[in-house]
Length: 125
Image (cartoon, rainbow, N blue to C red; front, side, top):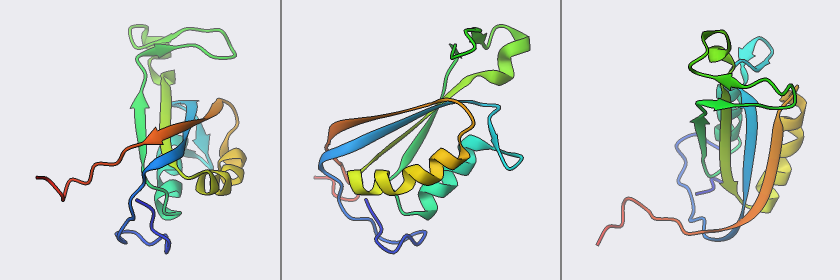
């Protein structure tokens, strides 16, 4: 699922075996250059040809400020947690981390080794 050219719509190769899972924990209100951070990160990952990314919207959570942000509390509803997950090679994750680091003003990034098994939708038996 990696496009060496980094071009949008380019054919992606198979991603399988030992990979790295990067999880980025931020708030839905985090911004980069006055734009929401999570869609900006998604676009960065897509433009750099990473295998894929998923944004998961949390319904509640707390971070360094120790304040519980909960969708049921209207005051904190806009500060809900967002997790962005990316699975790709160590090389690709290491290559994108400096750019992600520059964009982060808070939050958390975790990295872990995972065993990936990719199922191609186009090859059903």
